[in-house]
Image 1 (tube, helix red, strand yellow):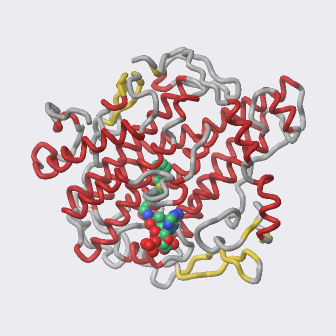
Image 2 (cartoon, helix red, strand yellow):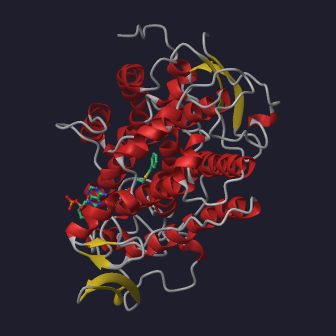
Length: 482
Ligand code: BYC
């Protein structure tokens, strides 16, 4: 147990929510903080709690200077509570209450629904830290290690953001939920995290990059739709979280891109033209492109599950209530009520994947998932540019939405990555062609040797083009021994 006696919480917690004047919430957070620190020490990055890490800390919400960089030990990171500035006279933008003033307090009739949304969002944040806790030990460079820790402390801050809402607006049951967020554990048999993808392992750095590319992007989409919320404190919280989230996807996109780049370079140097000559490529100490494709298949399909069922009355209710909008709701030109509109939804009909029009209100998860898929495809296009530029004949593609699904219309069927429905036996026989096999995992694990010399990179990944905070190439992003 960490001694908490002389902590000045008002200065410890950077905030723009007037914590020092809000004694009740300040007290509730003081009560919660020791448990959080214990959780961080138990479940946060293993082996690096004493290291000095060059991190950015959110200290204000000024778009020009919201963060400051400096060395800090992770357990001493200042996890703040920051909400985007309040918009005067903000109105609810969609659903039954469209045009009414945004709520500053929890609307009683929607209390349960709102709490559930906040708790689910909150649960994902610590879960990802737990999933990634072993990765520091195999970081391919100090630059990457620092990025991992940056992502981790910010996920911690996002937990704080949700806990603040629970403590401030939901009374005793909010406090209980806040405690439970520290009690569940990713992958635990008895107390698992709430959503599937957050109970999977993140066994290696390629998985970490794929996770931050694909799964953090689900985070972006969910936060974007909660940022539209008529419950103003949730909207403001999510708007600020999105500022930090962008870096997480940058880490994912460039991480996968640098992996691809190194593979292509090594193939060229060795005069290997066939990307499917896996043995020869692997002998160079880099990850072959077909295996990178399999990892993308896995993480994309797991992330699609996070959108829930294509047809969902939960989603319709949350929209009608004005709690959770569509992606960029405020930029869409329609009635924002969706009473008569329809939306095409993918389904299995007569053994085929087809599109069927459904009421747009119940199809909101599908629509958000579609927006996600087009957003995800953009970075994949940039990965393919790297491959093309190197003159290698290979293209990374996103699998069909029916492939490898556990939630929604395709949870009971199996499909190829192209979306052709097949039997369970055929899927089982071909699984290892489409998803990382045990042997693939072992090969990638064999490359995961740590590189802790400043400016040096493990052989399977190319260096980044520019440093964090414009630091030079040999900058010591993590001083491992404090
Ligand atoms: N796993 O009507 P349905 C992030 C349950 S990531 C397990 O189809 P709904 C981050 C569902 O709870 C973003 N259960 O779905 C990324 C319901 O159960 P109940 C996280 C699931 O409710 C990286 C039943 O199935 N944020 O931030 O319309 C690092 C029927 O549900 C799953 C959010 O998700 C699943 N995958 O939509 C760090 C935002 N899917 O209630 C962070 C908040 C569904 O009938 N959550 N179920 O017992 C939501 O908006 C929605 O609850 C969901 C599900 C999108 C999750």
